[in-house]
Image 1 (cartoon, helix red, strand yellow):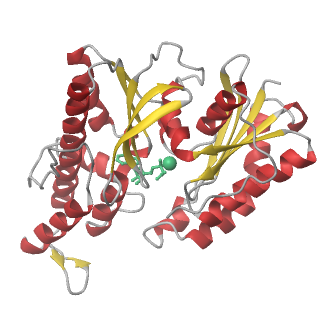
Image 2 (cartoon, rainbow, N blue to C red):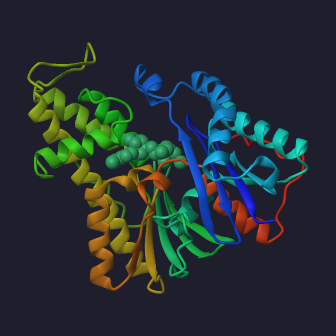
Image 3 (cartoon, rainbow, N blue to C red):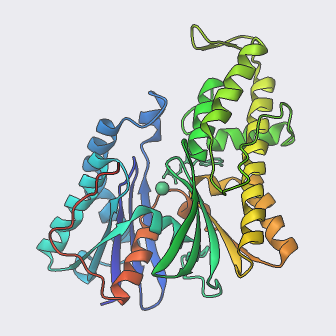
Length: 349
Ligand code: KG4
Ligand code: ZN
């Protein structure tokens, strides 16, 4: 009863992984990402995403089983993301998981996508479970869909202490990236461009401050960048067009200033969270934005200066993947938290 299949389809990807809960080791993790398809539209088109997921679901699962050197008959539990996410995409994964579980008389477990990111902190470089991460720790989970802070007290207990009031941090990267002509998703391109101009702060964009809470807000930042571009004559608001004066060098300076600004906001929240919750033993940086090496370096520095443990999963477990879902499935299975055939996707309001 130790092999678990984890399935993730909450946004545009299909992620499938095989986890051996006895050895506490990920045996495989395969992700299909149709980014080129969405790049054409500057973002994810839900209808196209779910169609592509439907077409690739079977193939990605077959690859994950093959890479783990196991057959579907060896799998005893199937875990699947059922919330939150795009309804049409979640439906593909949940329906597929139910069909597989039904046909093979396997156990079924629904996993919350956000829990997947939170506990991805336990996944080591070689897919083993990190044994030295001690509770309670703080998790900053930042991606294209969420930006939140959690106090994680055990495998079954965590508390959200801050969230974004509007856009997610990844959205700020993607929306500003779009203004300056970077593809989708813009995060990795922004990181590269920023590095090319020395990761400096050229334009001092405003930092969202709220002395009463640790919440985030990023929609004002996007607007501030837009109006700054217009003021400098680098963007035509009426036609919604980049202008010639926005040279690649200047676009890189915008990218770098944005990255420094977002990093400053994260650093501020981390320092204040450590001050407010002195019993925290460490910090986990997770989600797609956590793959940013400049920001992770800054946050790691804050932890090291305070003698707190810093962890971040390898890049392949930062962005959406089936491994984190398989891992949470294992924790839920150990507690006997199985679902029945009524498992369904949950609409997010
Ligand atoms: O976790 P993820 O794969 O999917 C969601 O659940 O959203 O995160 C994707 C987000 C995108 O907004 C992308 O631009 C951002 O993570 N991202 C980055 C980097 N790599 C991905 N943002 C900043 N720097 C990066 N290197
Ligand atoms: Zn995610």
